[in-house]
Image: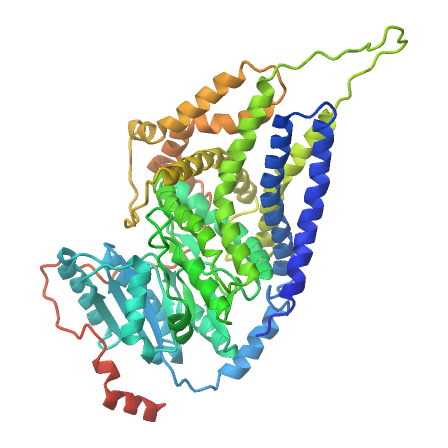
Amino acid sequence: MHIHGPMARRPIVAIIVLGILLFIVLRFFSVLASEEMSGVDIAILILFSLCLAHLLFSFVLAVVGFILALQNRDPLSLKSLSSITADIETGQNNAEMDHRIAIVVPAYREDLGQIVNRLSYLYHSLSVFPLFHHTDFYILSDSPKEDEEKEIACWSRAVIVLGAQNKLFYRRRTENKEKKSGNVKEFLEQWGNHYKYFCVLDADSIITGKTIFALHRAMEADQKMGICQTVPRPVHGRSLFSRIIEWNSLVYSRVFSSGFAFWQADQANYWGHNALIRVDAFKKHCALPHLSGTPPFGGLIMSHDFVESTFMIRSGYKSVLLPHIEDTFEEMPHSVKDYLKRDRRWMLGNLQHLRVSLFPHLTLFSRFQLFFGAYCYLSSFIWLLFLGTATVKALIPVERHSYFTQIYQLFPDWPVSHTLITLSIYIFTLGLLVIPKILGLIEYEIKRETHKSTATLLRLPVNFIMEFLVSVLLAPVIMYYHVRFIFSFLFGITVDWAPQNREVTHESWLTHWQNHKWVSLFGLSWLITILFSESHLILWIIPVIIPLIIAPLSSFLLEHPRSFAIAERLQLFETYAPTIPEIASIEPSDVIVDFPRYPEVLFSPMLVESMKAHN
């Protein structure tokens, strides 16, 4: 697989984004400069430009992704996807494998029963491919000693049901050093030499054998490919909140991911799971350093994945995203609180990446990727500064216009109205948010069979409108929390690496008020402040303030089981997901079969020689 023109496509995208940005900013400048510009006006112009740049960049890539998805073209090479698939199959169908693949699942205090259920789904779906006989499965536990008996019970049950002796292994570390990245590192040091590729799965990851097979074919076709991944889609949502996120990903992700794959080309970010990785390259080049200083900005890197792909690229290997390869999934938090809890750790990790971007020998594009990841979180702070500065301007008394400035003046100086320009800028900004979603909806409907769509033409627009309204309600709330997280980091408050809550919680209204009361009070105080303003700017800020005030109510309704039941009854936000078998219903008190937990027997010299002879 050849990747053409990344050095040409990136400047073209940048020129388009900067050109549109310059045009809109100049129009906005003409409004502010109609009267003498103050320091507040200059601040508004700068902050508006920074906010708009982010939206424009995503918008342009969504348009590119829409065109590529409709034409069924590979975002990397721009070739027809059907021809690429045929080329790879021609070269790989009759090829004999002389290497092995490891599927590894790092886990910390997770429900191991659910993990082995998901692994069994992959185990069965991969068994129809010859690749299966060269693949081993590992559960890499970081759980404390008291969880070991229960975990071994679940693992041994899976070995019995699957017939996976000397195929599925379990290892528990006695020292939880360097969290997930350290867990994977220790595995590679112990057993990595026996494998050419490995695939890291999260505890909630679901992936099919067909996907592993497709990723493996792509890696074998290009020996300089270090990381090959696709786009995991959220599934198994059991609240209205998580189900809307699922639908959003199902309908919109192909357009956005194709655009970003076009932009990133062979220097894509790695998302930490559901990807195939070249073992030798990863071991040699992707060891994570500890940042100097103390947490939160020093010490262990909280988001290891972007850094690992950056180091892989620095060493001369490619990291690619193949959005056309599907059937790879993950689960999402079911509540706003749990979603923000996970986002807080990701935010700290991305802010740490600003320091990583200064490391020597990184490519210029990798530095941009690290910066952009941090900027996506910092944009919430910039947006709030913009709105706050606009509020200050609204509170400044406006001098009455002087119609006659000279003693002998026949005609008055009529004030210049910029309402039309201001309104057009507002509508344009709104379009940057809405149009990519519309393009995603069009692509989804045109390729209904490809996306396994079950929604009727009537339900699609209803889903679209409801999803947009929910995103409007949640965006200011997420903005508030992102800003709050930034200040907590600045005051030295760090983040725990706690296991994700994967259960649906039915919390009372009072609990939701306790969780989000400060958001509501912040919005209420903001509303009271601008009520003293006589400026028309109040109309532009109200759509942000109201969602803040009703944040407890929004989270309560989005997480309430009755809301989810109503959506299910009306068949709203329907998605498709794999059915996972239940094979691990066993209690710790049950008999534990003494299977080999470690694969030394698999790599004994005699067995290795027999495997070579067999191949």
